[in-house]
Length: 396
Ligand code: GDP
Ligand code: MN
Image 1 (cartoon, rainbow, N blue to C red):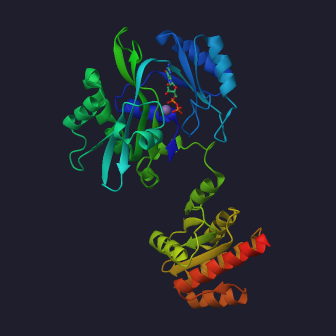
Image 2 (spheres, protein in one colour):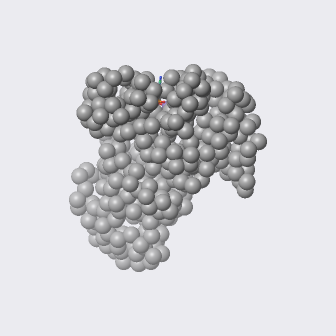
Image 3 (spheres, rainbow, N blue to C red):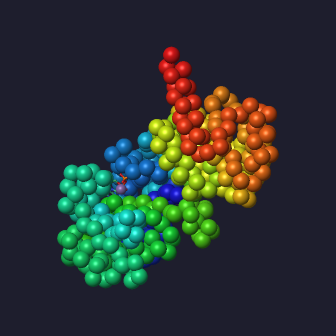
């Protein structure tokens, strides 16, 4: 789950990281009021679109203002703006920093190494993917120890390699703080871009005139599978930005991930879902999604899964692969029959149900004239063939 900058900054602040004071505003008047409270800090405020996409600056969603009048005006321009297809409904108003230099620093999950990776670059401000593509040597990578975490010497090494020797103490605290923020929140990304050296009161309470190191932007993604361990994090879900399909999948306890192919897959169990996707590929097709209806699914969950799959216009055939254990085959069959009755468009479907109540399922499906398969290979082959004839028909 991606969270908004304001929430991410709150999590950073909770770990003691330096973040300039901010408020969230939902209207130009609120932005004006926030600015009037924050302008005394540095004489300027920065107003930033709160949308869950990067590159807001480039899109015109980050602007400075030097008075409350100007803040109101700028907020009015940013609110309602579309950034990468998302409407801006709120802005963050923060005490603006006087930037000397921008850096990039992030704690990310390196799945390959099965470790937390601290990634830094002195080429901050720009998107890190661009740095990685054009100047990979400008990215410093340091893996945290799986048992000991990020150690002081590692954080110092990062600071020196970024040229932050003059801000050693702050840089070490921030590097370690990012890893800590990741661990205590079960995040899989904690990214600061830019981490900036700023002149004077860049952070609340900072002595004037001196340079400080502060987090000007914050992007955090939380691990969905660990959300149950953090009940307060649920409040950070932004309903403005959750795709309707994702919200429906969550309501029905379905794990659902969109992919680019044409074969919709409905499976129970994550391992079986992945196997099914592999076999679709081996049969020459491309899966349109990963979808796990979980254990013990009843007819209504099956029908919801079908709606999710069919909502994707690219889907040209559906492969249902259910291994009945706790899940009863006849329940799934009834769900499929009901789903097909409600379904808005006619898409060929191949069903394989084995295990608990498979015979009952088979006779229900036969009565309803469903195409079935006994082996997974056969099911995948039939689904791929059905999709191919659909697209041939569509092109004709
Ligand atoms: P992003 O474009 O979505 O990543 O949004 P950022 O928060 O990173 O802002 C984009 C750019 O705006 C930064 O790289 C900075 O150059 C600039 N910016 C952000 N905050 C401030 C600030 O407090 N003062 C100044 N002068 N510039 C800022
Ligand atoms: Mn940024």
